[in-house]
Image: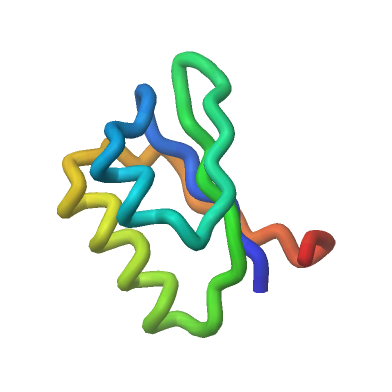
Amino acid sequence: MHYEFRVDGVLSDEARAALSGMRITVLPPQTVIDGEVLDDSHLHGIIAQLDALGLTLVSVLPNPGVG
């Protein structure tokens, strides 16, 4: 299933590299990160990765109409 993650601010080069498999769109004051999520474990892993990168997660939304 396709998911959209919104985080505060603009991603650093390190964060962009870590999320290279996902589409990244800057919509100030937030950044939208979206891509395919395989299962619940993958979803939780992405959320943990965003946290480890120091990003403030604003929302996580499934988008079944994409992908």
